[in-house]
Image (tube, rainbow, N blue to C red; front, side, top):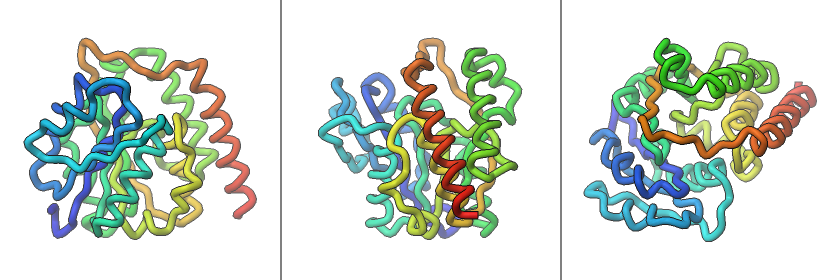
Length: 238
């Protein structure tokens, strides 16, 4: 528990057998529950997750549905468990657990319903993140400012987030885009529910063996579709 808030960390994972155990073990002790959502991994992600001393809840998708769908499954579990806040931390260990209190403070102080990380607040992102990804993320962030309605947020692709259960209950989770492009669509859904969103600086972590599973030729179409849909839905609702 953190500042009287019951916390559930959701860890979406797909083929993360080399990183999942360290990701689980890195979760701060003040977190009340950890749920790993395995999105039909073909490796030993599940088996290694279950060896953790933290004893996480393990949810498994029988077929691959996408990172957004995995997060939604975790959110639904958090709501059933009566958590006050659901936090997303990736299964590849790219999120610094030391940043978690800063991500939670705006919620604990009643200033936010949804807090998201902003890696661009740290200059080291220009060194640690590959240049092509810096450029791509910056472009998507600018586009998402327009389509989502949140002009003050940046680093739309950062998945390090915390959301209140009250805000989750206002969303139609089954309509959130399930795959790459999920964070962009999530912001649009939050805007339509009048959720207060706050950016929080977080440290980017990219190890020497890090390799992205995202391929631009497979990401451009879905993200473009999500951005257009988000913008159109927002225009219709205003």
